Length: 173
Image (cartoon, rainbow, N blue to C red; front, side, top):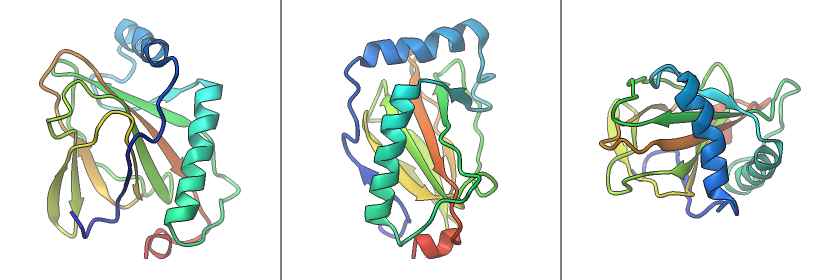
């Protein structure tokens, strides 16, 4: 995986009220199935959490990547994705149409020994094994798909994006 344009930050953020945050995400998800059996992310609106995470994401990106400036249309939204073995749909995708720099924060991973994410780069596929509270930063063009969990407990990941003026390839050179 050394050739992947991917940065992993272990224990990026450990929420003080993690159980409340998980409940805040899972209650409407279970009640409404608002990510439609794993087919899409749902906007996550928790202003204090989003602000902390977004600022940490921006700071980390500035330290790890080449110089960039935020586009005027950049947003500070977060997107949550919850799946388990009964609530899952494989979706290979990228984020080229929505951002330059993509990230995923793993809030809850029921079984860290399992692959959580499949990545595709230069026609090669890789399995990725993040831990809870890990944060990954990667270019918008990196194709990926969440792996199907093997448990009824939910894996919860939260996506943050940066839309920049510069070309993604130049930011990640």
